Image (cartoon, rainbow, N blue to C red):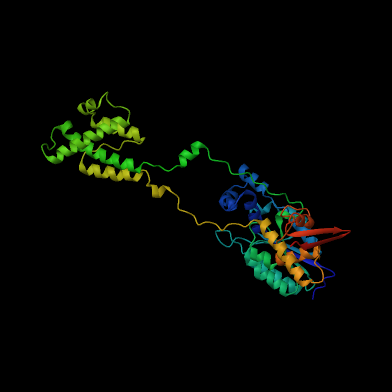
Length: 413
């Protein structure tokens, strides 16, 4: 069994995972996926270079945290070091005596299989170096849960380090202790600017077109106008039939409405009917009112059907097509402060049940109990300088007594 009096630590970093997770943490969810192609093609682009610089990982903060548990026996980082995103860290890692393990992408989507290689090396090192006491896994995938569980079964103290918001809860629960990268000493806090509201011009561009119904009426008006205007132009159309009379009346009514909509109405309603504009004028007025381009001139029934088919290709989309499909609602994220408050109350109740002789508990024992129940708990990540400040902020459920060097806590009834 490992000698806990002389702690010896092994550190394993899934570097690609931590870099991508921190990039998303700084610039927003799925930012790395959107910028992946631009980063691969031209990392020297000023905009990309600035975004990469803002999301730079502080390797020293991770290694220093791991060293606080004992002597660092080995430290390995797994990544594709030929990638420009990771290449900028090579000198920093070499300066801290980190063993760089090269993993070339095995597929087009850049999956390099770091989780499998890291797990194999960790299990091998535990049997090859039986004096290892601590294993530090720097990653966030739930794929490492079996590895963390195996390390614990082999008697090692497992510490997890991951980016807040990108680490699986199951991985944090599988570790003896978990620390968010954001809360490590020396790591700057992430403060993202709120999303800017879209400008009126941009909103107008993104607004869906709401004139498909008018376009349908316009098409009918065009057909009626073309049918009724043919006799006036050539004098060869059929006349005297009821159908021709109805079409002519419909065309006259449509022409009158179009002239009024285009702002070209005559002084009186009677004058508008008596001096109806020509088919070309009606067509131009309709297009001007709707803000669209006039279709090609119809010369025959066959040409008319082709024009309608061509116009259908460029016609405004139906409302059902312009509206985005509803996305599945994401599960609401519970407030970390509320979660931490419940954790404190649960730890105090369990502590009182085990210690019937005293209603006061040592604050250090309460904190240790809370970390055992939830290894991801950290009062610093919640914005408190110490655990005592965390307890004081929850005076409605906990009472803190400071006598001498002791800090005692009890559940407030």
